[in-house]
Amino acid sequence: MLPVIIAGAGPTGLALALALARREVPVVVLDGGQGPSPRRLARTCVLPPDTAHWAWLPGAGQDAAVWSAWRTMHRGREVRRVEFPSPGTAPVQLPQHVLEGALRAAVAGHSRIRMAAGHRLSQLEDTGQEVVVHTAAEAPGERGRERERTWRGSYLVGCDGKRSTVRKLLGIGFPGRTNVERYAVAALRAELPWPGEAGLHRGIPPGEVTVRPLTEGRWRLDWPLPPGDGLVTPDAVLDRLHATLAAWHDGEVPEYDLLDTGVHVCHQRLARRWRTGRVFLAGDAAHLLGALGTQRVAENLRDADNLAWKLALAWHGDGGEALLDSYEAERRGAVGHRLRAVDQALPLVRGRGVAARLTGRTRARLALLADGHVGAGPLGAPPRYDGSPLTPPGTGLSVTDTPPGAPVADVAVTALDGSRGTVRDWLGGKVLLILTAPGSQVWEPRHWLSAGLMPELSAMAQALPLPAELLVTEGYPGTSPHTLLVVRPDGHLVGALPGTDHAGIRACVAAMRGDAQPG
Image (cartoon, one colour):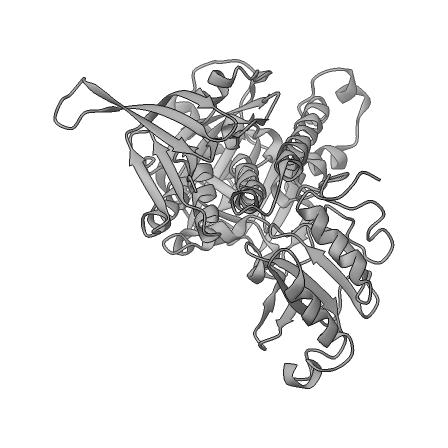
């Protein structure tokens, strides 16, 4: 079988390559860039719990800061506080170059991944049976002279950024807006009053600032800038920094080490199509966001998590066109919903337009400014794939608090071999069948493996057309005992139904393959 070709070696392309290789799919990554990203502490990413697993790759975890809480302050008074009771429920922030470096190291050590350094995609052809890609690369020892090469793949994924060559060659439009928001950014080492806590401060000089912790006493501060393309000088950043620090320390500027500064510009764009035949778009090649705390890198990694298991099934012959089509239906719909939410919120929180004059509720504005950071509401909540083509009609509408297409709760589970953890520990590979079985944490698995529903469920799981693993949990929000959840490899619910409904369970797995008939 031909490998999957990935154009682009940023976090999206590298994460997708690693996820495919873990599912025994060979991958070629066309790395046309200039090597790893520069070390910039003013360029960080926040990963919500559903994408935070990428922050714990070897080489990244020591620089990953887990937030303990979020506070929203207005004129020095706390108006909202969000506690994160455990690391698994909290956002994680780390420098983007650290994440990319850890991904590169993991990819370099995988036998199924081939990195083609210096190869820039120039042409592509989809024959219907394969994708033929032409690249250009500088000839070794011959500066200025390029050599061409042809690659053949089963599929091609364009992860080549906002100026994507793949998207342009396919003739796909990329409408949207530029410079939706701009921020001055500073990374510093200092002792601030809220160790480990992120927050939004409004109503203090110079007006508004977002503060987020990094490791080793380091912080990132962001100040929104007025509309326009005006130059932001280093002195202007220092003025904002000193005014902010003085407001937090009774008028005195404490000692600090300034580590990095920059300007962060947020655009909003959405590609009109994310799939054409055997070619897909992902990450910045498919969408751009970032205003009002929406998390660009996290959204890109959700593309990789969603597409990886679907491409792997199709590559192994276990999924068809409907399965591959569901990637665009789910992810483009989710990102489009996020972008519309930003467009609706901007006039309210930035004081532009009639809507802002009619909305005098300070708390409502502050909530919108925080939601993208804390993972709440339309701006920040993890995507829910309503109406997904992979959800069988009428499944799981009344037996759990989690609707079909939404991420499942990260409850404690036990496997048949006795190993224990949470749901996220088992994601990324097989279909998960999670049975609500009160008392399972009390007894050893050998006592309940042969009791109740377990023998029949275990036998059925082994006979399903997709690899599946049976897990048990003491309880799940909104379910009754002996309810079974069918969970996709990316952690989204397919359906919840009685554990005795074997036909319904098989229908859920068939739907995951794209076999379900329209209701």
